[in-house]
Image (tube, each protein chain N blue to C red):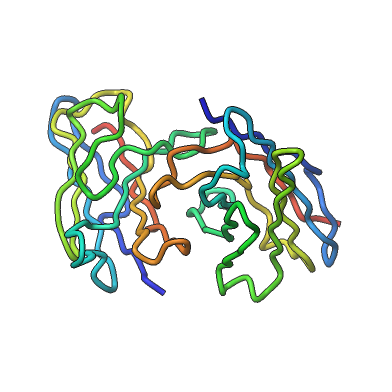
Length: 117
Length: 114
């Protein structure tokens, strides 16, 4: 059973970098599949942030204007998200998820990150 | 970008009645090579991550009750709940994966009991 668990600070100051980690269990990241991050501002819609293939190839939502960086650490079976120069608009629940053929079959429980001074 | 537009934004249906949610994509999500529609539906309850209900527009995920069904092709899709149960109260999202590994979601439809 594939399980994903997000972790990281719940509060980030404006203009700083949001850093999250997703620990995967039940499947080795290095075995394949894309892995992604999706966020959801409070009361709002789901927004795909970006995806990374097990070999490190990344794709990002153009709306984030190159602020997002996703990486994998296969030795720890983790993927990470760094979002630079955050503003209040980046306040959201951040999910890591694994698409299976394109639809997201596996999701973490999500972690709320608030951007505030 | 492929834009996904759902209708209605909210819906109230009586228990046991049919609920219908629509999703329209700004371009076709049907791949002619395999005749598959790259469209999924999710259910999200408060405080929970989205749950995959339907993929390839009409294939139910394992464990999803058969009162949930998906239909449509090309740019127009429908999620139908044949007989609404209390536990179906949620927000429902469609998602295209035609442009995998880049994805877009609809704005969501909030389903309530009338």
